[in-house]
Length: 75
Image (cartoon, rainbow, N blue to C red; front, side, top):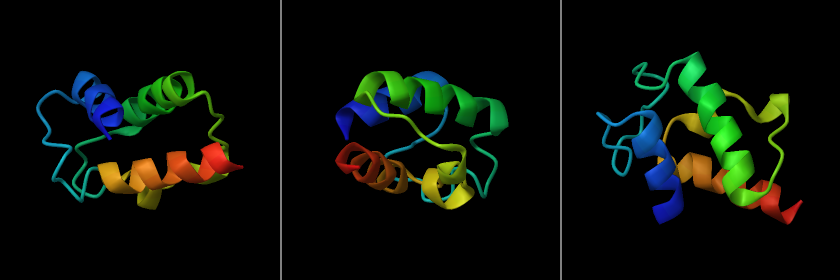
């Protein structure tokens, strides 16, 4: 989780990503931020995030993002 929170703090420094559950819903992460986040996650975790995974539910909180990353690491 620390690695993920570090990535999120670089992309959205004014957001408390550790506790926020509405990153996309409240427009704290816009489409460009999500694309940057996808690229950073792919590099940091050595995964590929397919387009079908880029949905608000997977990016609304750090926990949701980490769950997606863990699921893709196992695939």
